[in-house]
Image 1 (cartoon, one colour):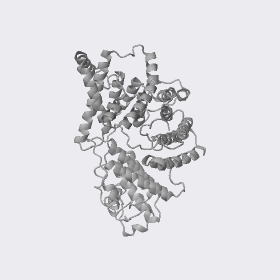
Image 2 (tube, one colour):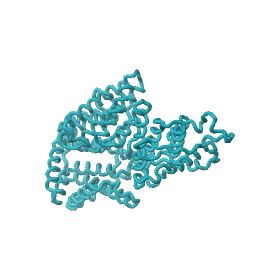
Image 3 (cartoon, helix red, strand yellow):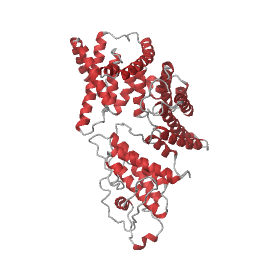
Image 4 (cartoon, helix red, strand yellow):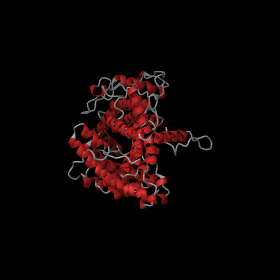
Length: 536
């Protein structure tokens, strides 16, 4: 469909963990003394359960022993007895109580402990039934998703102790994976097993299908999302109201956005990709018009259809719903205001995607404002610094054909022509945005001094990208920073340096001004982070 593929899609965020979440929060640390209990697990029964067709054993003897020790520490038995197996289930053995304890541990940012409770619940439920409990498998999948998110958002100083899983130590499919992807792979297995165990009985929630949609690709991902939306539609029509209905509609609209984005990425060559993505985006808007995400998805669809005016209108509505500086007069924003609804900012990946759309529309000033909200959340994301640099480069009058020049220099003429065609399309969309900005600001024309100032800022941002890449490499995290982005950044630096070399005095003055601005303090001693978020 259309002329281009959309950026990598953002998955639904309402009600479930997104991987990666790119948030600024550090990792979560399991309590260090959970294994130091009294060891009173006299009544525990070690059980090994294998789910049909999922290719792994959920609970080995080692995992059972680890989880038993943690459970005994939380639910000590006051009167050990050899005949305890014949008693009615206690909290220590009741899967429902163990799952409740797992959820409580997860809420307390202790996923390692939550995992042990859930594994114990799986062992306990399997000992009394030939079939595993789908709710327990769902809980285990959610725990692994939280662990994956913690690993992917943690920095070097954030320890994450989630040892004791014990169920995949010898699994060749997982052995070579880093902790984050390893947890994601385990989560997918648990969710698939939950679907198999549920067998259509409705014992698992729609979130299981939402997670599986996030963890898979293409047609399979679409099918999982469709099942989740079907379940949420039934729930919405069952008489729920108020906050419960609003939450359900928010989840459903986000899922529909993910389905639309699949047709703009994985299934962009589908014969009905354009029509399907448009229909899904419009349906998402109708389900929850106060959700910024479907309006942003619709903007992406309109941009892929070469309808920049409509794309900007949709993006204006999205921004107006959550970002006060761009408050919209649209009906959706007015409805949200009238109902006293406070819409929280979209998830970090959605805001990054919003900034990219704004850049494609030539709305670079707005893009930097959105990027500032991302940087306040995580100032160590190389991509946000790169996007800032590209905004400053373009605001200083930089072109957008550098990628095509690089491809042609490498002898890839077909790729160079495709890139130039895309650049022309992007320029056409950007002209609309630039004309709108120029109409609001008569000084929008870039003079030489302004260009120097913007390009000095762009270069400083690119230096930050390079520093973060080197830091990641030194920490053994090769591949975290996109190589194509780094290569493009180096090309921009070469172009910027060649220009600044011809304007030495102006460049020196711009750098001095930046140094002075970086030291400005607000009354009360606080630095002006909002105004100079990108100054280094």
